[in-house]
Length: 291
Image: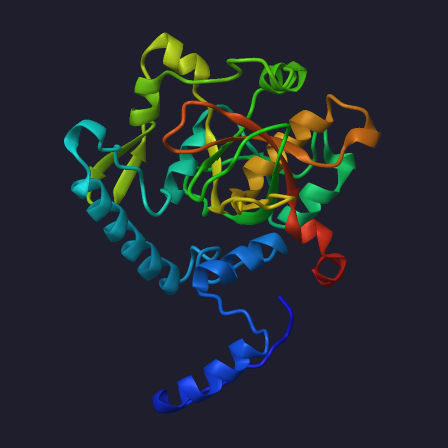
């Protein structure tokens, strides 16, 4: 955001400064509006977009308490079901269990794997199978809806199948349906095992399994309502994202290799929306050169 001034005043002086500033055209905003401004500019906002810090944990604990109180005050017949707050980041490990995942060796960085197109192919040198005990590594991405969709904070980002992409791209704006999961599966996608601990549930029903898509990340900042160019921020697991891009780019012309297709589903929705994901780090050339 633009560089401005921070004014620290004794409490008794605030009104003396506040009134002249507002009368001269200054716009008063709160933390929510400041978050909106950051989102419009495609910039991370503290602490919402920094889930690895203590401030994020404290902030989300407060958000969870407020959400739970709101749910409890609702009449039982219209009470929404609980959703995980904060997002259950560790559940992304389950995506690695579905088949082999290529992982760079110790001499190859995640960034190099993402950038080097010569490595895209089935016979990659220096790529090993994934070990379940590995720490997760997340990359910040920007999400733009493909045709339609509003992405909320906490929405799950999933890996699409190639057939999903073809289906959703070929749909016209007025088509009904699209890619959806059964409503019963929406409620059980994440199951609360204990307070503040959620697990990913793999459906046993054949129909639910067919529409189940594995998570690779979560939206940390949702769309700003009314924005002319809505963009959401998310954090996605780097290896899963690289694997997904490899699969997609191997099946498209080189000139179309720009974004990565992902699926986004709001936690209380049964519909998957197609989105275009851009890796923030790759848009910051100075940072890439430094690395």
